[in-house]
Image 1 (tube, rainbow over the protein chains, first blue to last red):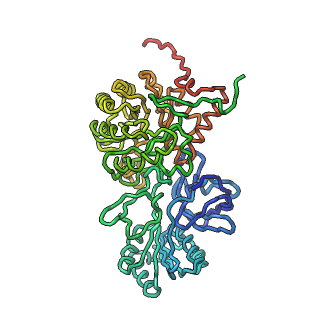
Image 2: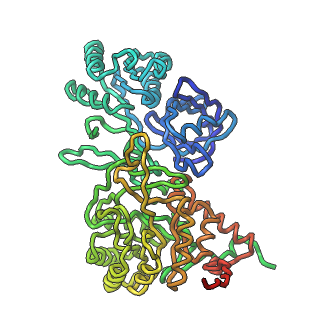
Length: 261
Length: 316
């Protein structure tokens, strides 16, 4: 983990509520993996005070850039939208435990809601580079909120879109879609982010089909480096429950272990 | 001519029999092993790991932290692996460093404070004990031992009997008169006073109408609390000769100097490290710059040196 200023190469709005930022990470002397995140200082002021965690959307190793796709949710992310290309942004990371991909996997399933796809897109890129195919279910409120479809298709992923607007994003419909995909493809592993409802569904389905699955969790963070114990979740360790830090032991966990309240 | 050579600055301070190479140390609860990757611990005055409880504790419900203007409220609730884990892992880990290890203790009773203090003080790696008598997150709607002068006195007196190691009483700011509690801790046998823990606070999401943190109330920290803490350091300085460790809202070198001028001998840094992981070392450098600017060679000469000209009040 390192903290320092990175130059913003672009920072633009991509839909009603989402923005996309590219930074020059050529000075970052650390490997970055999908599932990890950076803690970004959105403002130099004392309000908002805390940094905000942003998962990595794309890693461009040859160009030395990192990309973040972010939802404008509160004052912190609002302040970040005001930062312009050419300015620098104070970034701390990479932080957290990444996703793991097994070399012998042929096809993986990704299921994400909203900005959760920002986290899974970097994984889709990594999978494509290793010759692993991906099927992706993207869920959002509206067609306008559907993110990264083209990015994922660019990585060769089969993309299935569900939205409230189209009336096919409820759990029952998504379960049917999931079962269809599982009939059509031999899925070696599944990954999720962005919705507890969908994560619970995936937990059930992957348990029945005995498919290993991983989840990237989101939680309010204080320090983001394992010190303050603000961002915790419960995981099952055998018969007992253990409270672990999302920033340090996560944000990626085996899905079957996580207690999704 | 006064030299501005860096090596001639004397940053050493003494807090109740413990000499530190400089006045900067982390606040308990805002510090852990993982910070080793961004901060050279050997450059700090001391290390203060998170408060330890006797038995493992799960901590409070999430969300455990929320932001307010110029600050944050936390309700971690001292998630702890218990003293056995602490003795086996945390004490040896920090024992490897060249600087003092101050063990912060949280307990459910006076007797438990004494029991834990005796155990921890028996370890050579532990240089001092910070008695966290002030955490507002424990049961009792934010009540803490450090809100009652008699209990504070009895607690310090009881712990004093089991160890000769320096005792730091971490006071609660959630009291009507911090002077009264400071006096009680002093008379009970404390060697140093930490002023202070977080300030009991609450924040509500007006859209959901729910409290922003799971435990409803929590402790406010960050720049918003600093003026309150500076006032309390100044007040405690009036009633006790014990060295004071200032804690609350220090974000930069000037904040630290402000607390020292109010009467603190050393300063703890908490929330600032979340925003700037290297904050403690940055603050230390800024203190040195201030000393060079005003040709101060010994940091101790600044302690309590606020110029206060009290105006004669007319009787009303």
